[in-house]
Length: 408
Ligand code: SF4
Image 1 (cartoon, rainbow, N blue to C red):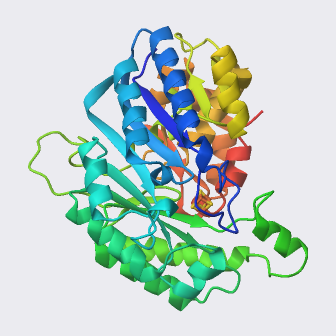
Image 2: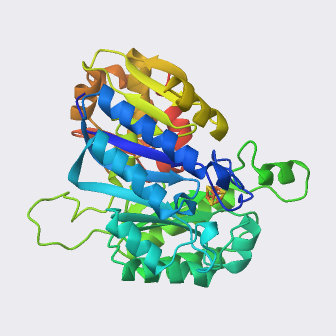
């Protein structure tokens, strides 16, 4: 293993389902919380033991809404990670949470005492699913919280000691007035969170919204409107001190006296997600979770595998066979190189460096993809710097078309 591992824990439970969501998450499965976490801990322990308790640099508890779980179950899951892996003292430990009415703890909504408990468990980064600061938009999206409850959740998280906070926001709702998007961004900026993730609304197979659009009950999202809102956000956030480091992600540099550049104290990019974009190894635990391990040698084949999706199947498989693996693939050669380009080019500043490509693929990016890079640079979508390639601002809008050029 050439890198420390990133650990992802999937919590597939939510209080209700939002209209646009196609994640592997379910409402009304409270009776499965305990057996699910028991199975999750078993999977974590056996993965750590099989690899000789390797180093782990990040833990991301995502979902779903992880905070629907009672605190003692979250404590068990984190304890299993620490027992089975050598979790770094400065590990980034993220938990996703949703704002909501403080009294409704069964919804997974969090208040200051619950945030303080997460901090005491060692969670040091919180990702809040805010989505919008406009109440009409929140209702349309099927969210269970209001704008002011989202603000209260943010303030409570700060008061509980979270110094690394992300807000997830959605743009590109059908007919979304630019003014409401401006207000959402302005409010997000005024809260001074360290990190913002902006996602364009997309129609996902299986989401109720997609069905409503197909039946003509709701207009479809408009790509041109979404592009305008995205460009506005990029300008707006830049003028308010946020640095875009990935197509959908912005971080606020933190003033520090630390002499170590890019240390966790000075850099609020999401270290866990950087693992995915840099095509480094991660282990995913839980229903439907994916894992990826790189071959010991750059020229070898890497392996990706995934678990069964349904929660009862996951529990049953862990209880009976000790494994929930449902499928796997090996990736080597040109496909592995193409994946590195597709993922790495999402990093708008970093892109794919010659050194990274050489280290991970055992070849020169300028030779393997000479034709593609020349063609995309000629169309103004990619730029070749002395030591790396990366998207241009135009390329960020057409990322999927650029990435497709690198895949076999
Ligand atoms: S809270 Fe998040 S994971 Fe749960 S249904 Fe809504 S969007 Fe999906």
